[in-house]
Image (tube, rainbow, N blue to C red; front, top):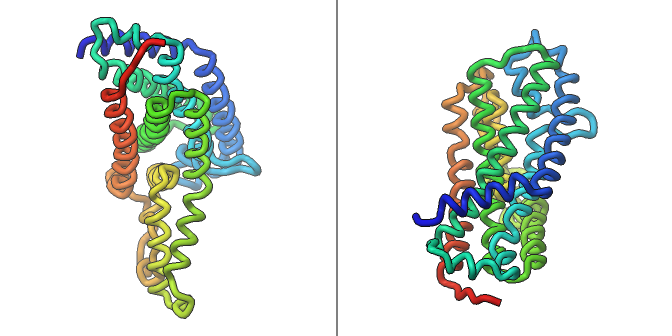
Length: 311
């Protein structure tokens, strides 16, 4: 694809050298270091009595600080939105997009190069933060993680990249559809608020409305209501990310849905191997990938068909 490499290199250099990237990197790094440091201090005494202590750093809350993956769930969308909300409309408003397309560069190379460069920036940022906080945890706990623990952290990193990649694709879509950069940023923030806070409440309301009052004490009815609530909540990428993260970083988790008491009688609480945990979260990972692909497809089709004029 003519021009893709040039656009990719230029956008990647702009992202990595921008103040926006530095501010977001420092913000997430500081939050991650604080969370992992406090969590590692609180679980240091469990080194000799607990398995997968290294993974506990990423999932253990301590006092007012939530676990590390919660910070990623909350701050990750801001990274994706901040890197792409003005990727296309910013060029249009400055009048540089028409001059760029006047060069021997295919139009799809522009949108593909911008998205891939932003996604690479996200991957570099998240990988650097995970490596730094892992090194801090190893230094505090004085333990060497096992091969399976390292593989679980890598799987968690991939899920994080897909999660932030969805918000990156959504911001790119708003940047293509909306000419004003401020409007695109507000649309992205509104979507973040909706998926983070309101989807779960809407899912609870719909599930409770569907279930009748006379079956409130029926275990099967309660189970169906809970399953309906979980299914509706999985429309949100936040829910998909949290479920995938919990199953990957907590090997003792054997299911992501509600279970009855008779289902756990006689069950030996052994941790799942990595392959089984990945199989458990495969639908969530595919869901995140599908959401990211759908949003980028909308942006791609709209960008390829819209008329671009110089100012």
